[in-house]
Image (cartoon, rainbow, N blue to C red):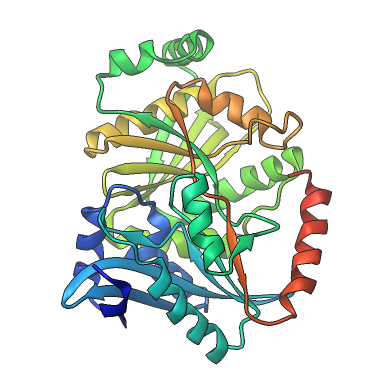
Length: 340
């Protein structure tokens, strides 16, 4: 297959899009059809691009026009997605350059789903990309194989994690509920704001979370989990179930020694197994080389459930206009201030 014979076309058929992704191994919900719907609901302009070799679809890329105070750019989150035999990056980038020019975007940003390697980094570098000053979505995640039996999964956990789950299961005061009602997001939001203040990270506004819920709800792909102690909400999570993987996308909790969060995660894992999921993705973790990273405590919590780390190629930027370099400096300073 030569890129000289490839064509890029916009895709408008949800079934074609999702079927192609279903047959791809490396992917996250950030390239799903419903993530595109979520971004449209937020007022963002999107393109669903299909890369064809003749009439055969060999790759897809959801592209989002991001309008921020610092500037406007095109963004490909955890993409592009391609079949195992294809090399689609060159032809896709040519199309992205055209769209960026038409939309007056300062640069193109890609958060690749590709494995972190010298070869993959070199492929982007040859096309004019460089490392972005910040990341938009996790570049390192923690995943757990949940095809195993519950007993095997528990046996693979850190001893303390397993003990706290067992203690929580014995407590009549700890209850875990599951909801698909958007009205319950109000309860999550209050806990979420407390978590943001405690851990000093930038969270999402309530309308963002509500739009995400509304985008994935029609296909029964999202749930809110609520962990309570004596009737009070102590821990909560928003989880996306998509194409055999459950994603722990948003979480919130009180600072407490009561092990509600441990039982909450265990109940999510069991629900994912009931839905036929093979993997539980705990989402972002801190990089190994930053011991004072804001996510360090959360990373310790996630890794206690057993599993393995997966690292993607670092976020890549392709400058289109000179204004990009002002944005680069601004984002670099912001990253340093956040300690990321």
